[in-house]
Image (cartoon, rainbow over all chains, first blue to last red; front, top):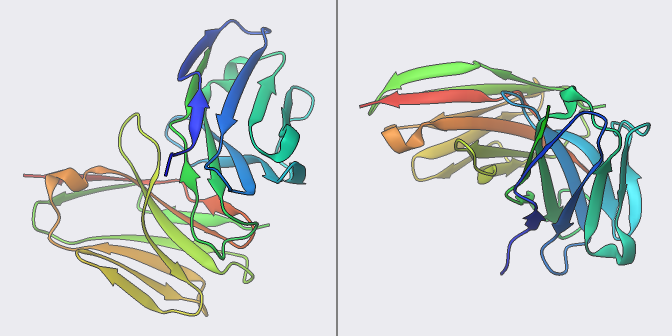
Length: 116
Length: 109
């Protein structure tokens, strides 16, 4: 099966600019996650979707971050305006169902964001 | 919410030795405990997982143990090889996974 697709792979922007990341999950996976992984740290959940609804966005900095999953398939994560501390790898993951009964996530390759 | 702690942060072993990484979790509702291996610049890859109704699981040189009472679980790698060198993350959760801070494993030939 095809994996989780993410683009772009790399992005360099200046602070206060905006940026958007795209994710296409594994076909048929209802649950989609966006994680932020700062260098040297574990992935931190930003937002979790079940189909096109938000299940958990408690750790999403909503003053600058937004995400959507229209039609319950692809998802876009946006940052506006970016700060230096947003420099990180943004990982998208998907799983077949809500909850962990179906097993672990499949991660995409990530987008490495550098804010200068 | 769930909180996962992972130790040690760095682990250096000689090829052929065993390596053990330990994690603790806080939420008794968590029922799934995977381990991921992440090589430099690559995505996390699932290497083994365990569910809360099982105490131990083994896959060739890798094993995971779970103590639900104490809320801790461990990854055991036997007969380590240089290609085992990577960062390993534990995670715990129910509807979502919370990750530990990672252990950098270095296996020297």
